[in-house]
Image 1 (cartoon, one colour):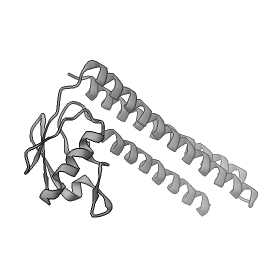
Image 2 (cartoon, rainbow, N blue to C red; image 1 turned 180 degrees about the horizontal axis):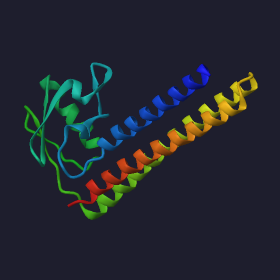
Image 3 (cartoon, helix red, strand yellow; image 1 turned 90 degrees about the horizontal axis):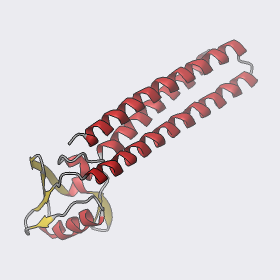
Length: 186
């Protein structure tokens, strides 16, 4: 039945989006190496609008443990510096008037454990999203059953949704495990 296939495709797409979102969130958790991604999600007040840091400054990594941020407008340097300090990332930006330099300190064992907890929490929220997608899809399939779809087709579709859920959760587990390994590697 065509409607069933539409719901299954929708569920598959939404589960892929849940994985992409979790990947994005995990990329913001730093593993002791300097990376421009560390600042994804940091918003700076720019002419009255909340703007992503990457849109008002260039972020470069000249060395593995240092980051340079050059604002497109010099007047924004102190604002950017304040936003980085307030972000509670464990970074200490140094403003020389032209650029902001940040030395990324190596992670302590305690900080690594905190980041692993954060990683697991992101993984769990990804799994919650996936379970919600499964539930919504199954609800839609049950509605089709009431509208006259064959019971066998709906049962098969529910099995496909469960297989999709299991497969997506396995991908998520792999993602989390690799991030944990990255965090715990000194």
